[in-house]
Image (cartoon, rainbow, N blue to C red; front, side):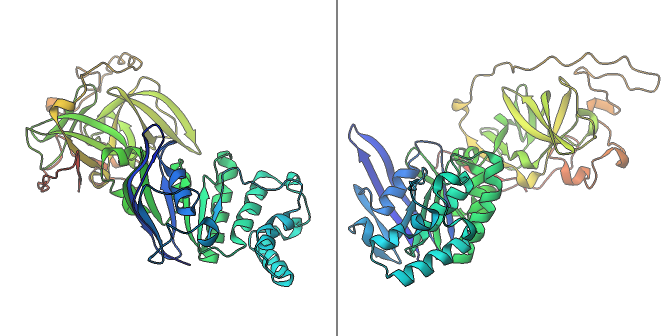
Length: 435
């Protein structure tokens, strides 16, 4: 085990393409760190610099506090597993794993013991004499891992280890790989463009884009407290409302208005949420956060449903747990969100996009009111309270385990919340949770 630190690394390639800009992060001993970013963000370049396959223009790479920037790759004590695995198809599983040990002159007895131990760890003891082309992709992945681990590297580097697999293949292998790395207690850095892979594997997360490290830290902290809009989007957050602040509410035409304590009338703000924290509820339920949209499509997820809503000019994924039957296309639904899971980023009024009409199906015409129905409101939603404020639904009509206090975001009918202090910062955005 070892600690790894990347300190203010820069790399520019011919043609003035800047691949890395002042990149810094650290990985603790025995920890698994994932570098998350889109293609071209600098993840692979960073791994190559750590491994010694490329040299930085400036900055340093330290192992256990000692610089290794000037060391050749074979003297760094690191193991790098490429995305294409680079296995020898004409050799057996056993010989692939033993190859690196034979090249560095391990004695035969020790080499055989090490190979057998690793094949047992990765669950390939029974296929040690098979050729690589006789294995499944997942088995080949484990052979490559065993071969990379054979020389006992102090740090393991994995470049897109799940890049060529489908989700069904990846789901099981992620758990297996995580279990193996935990058992070996090997400090590991994984480069991935897939959020699910990074979250399933990593204790620590480094978020990159365009050669810059945007945020790093414990995985739960980075995902729960993104430092900027860019990090939030890479972490899967979506925008619920984007617009000027009026009377303590962020207003956006076609989306709605969300109460945000602590903002001033001169502010514009973006309210973001993770889809896992969003529930679609009937517009008349009184449980909405102030934002609503029209149903574009529904998708089954086991016995429940995922619902894509057209909110303003965006599509927002939500969960539907109100009823076993999915909502119909074109139906207007409100979005319920726990206030503590929302993130607010302050922006400039000048940067707001010009309003445009959303692309969404027309809502169906309201049914004629029955004898006991309330008259329809101007937007077609039935109301049973004055001023268009919906009545609280009966407890039997609410999703199991939920309540209006727990699920509802701030709305006109909610009790006023104490103001949240907001401090100015010099970054492009400033962020605060709604609590």
